Structures are given as C-alpha cells and as structure tokens.
Image (tube, rainbow, N blue to C red):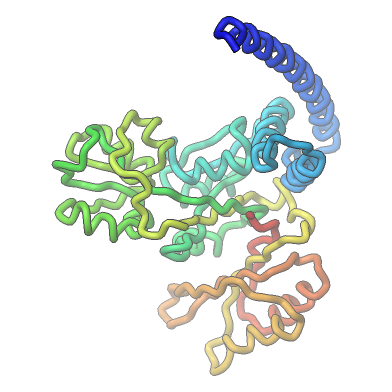
Length: 365
C-alpha cells in the first residue's frame, strides 16, 4: 500500500473516531441530565447521594455486558469516572485525605470516589478523623495496614474514640520511588518520607544511600515537597508526587518487597452513610477488650469457631491505662447482617469489657 493510500485510510478512521466521540459526549450529557434528576429526588427524600454499593452494582453489570475488546478493568475505571462526574453534578462529595497532593492516600480516594471528588488535604490522620467526625468532610480515607510493615498504629488508636465507622476499603499496590531535583543519587544527604515508607525501603536505602539521614515527615508527598526545596534532599513518594513537585525519579520501585500493598479504610459518620448492605465478599472490623484473667483472649475465639466465622486479622494495642491492659482489633470474614456472623458477635460481645463494631463493608479486590 502506498503512503498516500495509508494516509487516506488513517484520515477516514480518525473521522469515524471523531464522530463516535461526539456521540459519546451526547450520551454522557444525557446520562448527566438523568443523574441531576436523581439528585433532586434524593435531596427531596433526604437520602444519601453517594452509594458505593450502587456504584459497584453498576460497574458489575457493565462488566458482564462488556463484549470487548476493552478489558473489564479499563471499563470499570471509565465507568467509575463517569459516575463520579455525574455525582459531582448531584452533590460534590467532600473527602478528607492525607496531604499534600501526591500521597497514596489521595490515590486511594480517587480510586474509590473518582477524580471528581472534592478532596480536603490534611497534615496527618488525626486531622482526617477530626474533619470527618466534625462534618467538615463527608468522608475520610486513612491507611490502616501495610503488607510489609503491618498496621498503622495511629489509625487504630483513633478508631477507638472516634464516632466514625468504616464503609469501604481500597487495597493499593504501593511502589515507592526516590525523587530529587537532580537526576542522580550523588550528594544526597537527607531522605524524607513517612515512617512507614522509610521502613518499607530500609534495605534499599542501606545498600545505596548508607550515609544519608533518614528523616520522618507527615507524608510521602510532604517529603517530596520538601525535597523540591533543597538540592541535597530526596523524597520517597509516588510518580504522581514527582509530577506534582517537578522532581526527577532517580530510582523506581525501591521498596524492599515487590508486592507491597497498603489497605486504606473509607470512613464516615453513620448519619452520612449507614452500613452498606452485604455484597457477598465482606469484612467486619471490631475492637474489643476483655477482663484481665487467664484464658480471656482464648475465650474470644470460641464463638467465632462455634459459628463458623473466619478471623483474618488480630492485633493488640495498649489501652494506655497504666494497668497493662490491651484492646484487640479483629477482622472477620462476613457481614454483620448474616445470621452466623450476628450470632457469633452477640456471643463474643457477652465476653467483652469493651466492644465496638468499626464497620461491616465490602472487601477490596
């Protein structure tokens, strides 16, 4: 085929794409008009604007109807953004995240709510909890567990006294990158990052930057922001942070474990959104304490075994009472509305000096 013929064929195909784009835009705006009507009805009824179970249902139906060649994961991403944009017309969702821009917490929020969410950037997870509990933000996103370093202790402590509950989660594949003004590791005197990130990259740092000071800051994005102010400093953060602060990615994926994931919990007040209905793939999180007597912790596990409930996490945190007492954070498989789960928890509660369900919600894939 000659070059002119190739150009002519390409021009025809581009015209087809342009025509289809216009049709898509028209259909998307039709969808948006219907979404505005839905928003008005919700406003009159006083019902929740954001329904993660409805989002999941729509995406699941679209994936089932997808004839290809688009992959389902790409279709899901497109539809989540469409629904996020339409929801912003109904009522923009205010979401508190760990700042500044470029954090993995921000990325988790966008994965859950879509990029049309109205994000509020907080200096630490304490502020995320406070903003959500006070109503400054309708929702919050907080890190709770990393596959390499374990739980985020401060988040667990904050759950204990906060009135918020968990309505969802995001499991994010975390790749840490070394960011700097110059595209070189030479002359780096300080590496700045969140304590969890420093711990997750300690092997790489010991090998490649053994003499550099490791300085903990409130977030990885804050470390990137500071690295942009000093040529001898480097930050550990995401590619998004590198773009945000105009930094070079000196080294990619420096985390010690290749499969490094972090769980983020989506929190809100119960009056903002009640416990989501059972999805078939759910987790129930709770925190308990037991009287300080022999066998008390063992007794906690008996109701779960008796009713066939699997426990997926068991963490202890000091009660800070000065009496060597502990709170236990437990994740179990299943939804609180399921009879066998409800029976197990009712029996477990009778054994506890303190008992609080943190949430019952769909697990992240």
